[in-house]
Amino acid sequence: MTDLIERELELPASPAEVWQALTDPAWLAAWLADEVALELWPGGDARFRIGDRVRTGWVEEVTAPPGDQGDGGVGRLAFWWAEDLQPASRVELALTATERGTRLRVVETRPLEVLDLVGIPLPGHGRTSFGPALVAA
Amino acid sequence: MIEDPAGAVFGALADPMRRRLLSELAAHPSTATELANGLPISRQAVAKHLTSLSDAGLLERERSGRDVRYRVTPAPLSEAVSWMAEVGGQWDERLAKLARTLSG
Image 1 (tube, rainbow over the protein chains, first blue to last red):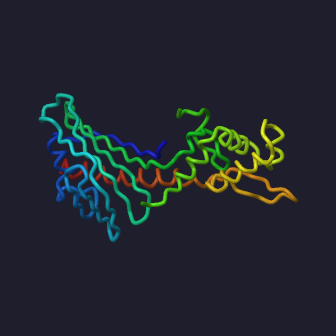
Image 2: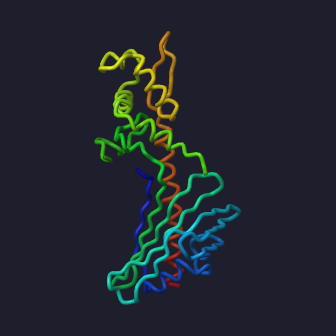
Image 3: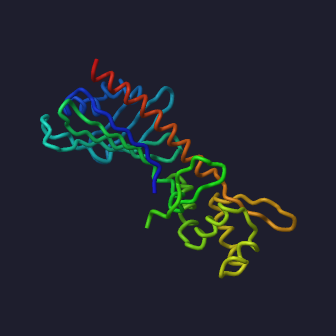
C-alpha cells in the first residue's frame, strides 16, 4: 500500500490551456516551484527548485489532452521527484474537459506505507483510521 | 538506490504470524512468554518473530523485571501521517496558485 494525497479541482480554462500550465516551464514557475525543468518524454529528467531546495526526478508519462472539446479523453503528466536522500514520490496530474473548463486531479503517492496492510489501530493515535480489517490481499 | 525502510517493514509484515503478533501487541503490550501462552507456537519462535518486527522498527522493547515487554511503536504511522499533512498542504498552496494563474 501507499501513502497518498489526492486533490481535485475545476479550473476555468480549456484543457489545452491547463496542459500548457502543467508543461511549460514559464507557467510551471508560477505555481509548482520557483524553477522547473522537465524533459517531456518518458524517462526524461525532471528538476525542480523550491527556494534553496532542489528536487530531482524523472518523467514517467506525458499524454497531451485530446482536442479541446471534451470527448472524455484524459491528459496526463506523471513524474517522480525526491529531495536529497528522501524517498521518492510519484505525482500524477490528470485533466479532463468539463462543461465549464477543465477538471484537474492531482495524486501524489509514496509507495512506502505498508502498515495499513495490517489494519490495526496503533497506540497513541486516537484518530487513526487504519482499522479494522486487513484490506490488501 | 535509496535504502528503503519500508522494505524492512513489508518483509516483517509478510508473515501471517507476525501480523497476528503485531495485532496482539497493539491491543496489549506483552512479553514473548505471554504471547506464546496464547498461540500454537513456542516461546522461541515468538521471540524470533518479535526480533524481526523490532528490527523493522515496528516494536519498542521495554524492560519489565527479568523480562522484556514489547509494544507497537507509533513512529512509522506518525511519519506517514506527517507526510500526508505536509504534502497535502503543499498541493493546496500550489493548486491555489495555479487557479489564480489561470483565471488571472
